[in-house]
Length: 78
Image 1 (cartoon, rainbow, N blue to C red):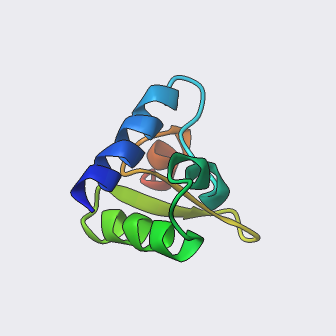
Image 2 (cartoon, rainbow, N blue to C red):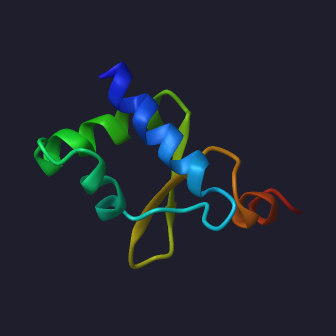
Image 3 (cartoon, one colour):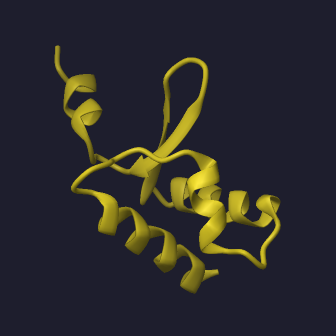
């Protein structure tokens, strides 16, 4: 599981210049031998450990590294 977590974090960091939020389906190609439910468990573990966070537009949920992206700064403004 630790290796899978590292793969996900490295994938996000490699794309961070152009994108900070990812759909669940973006992670499935990283683990072609795993079922979607297994990938979901890895993502949930990363969120629980506060490495990643959920981001919701209201109609869809996306994943991103905690504190990354334009939205993170806007959410903490008063």
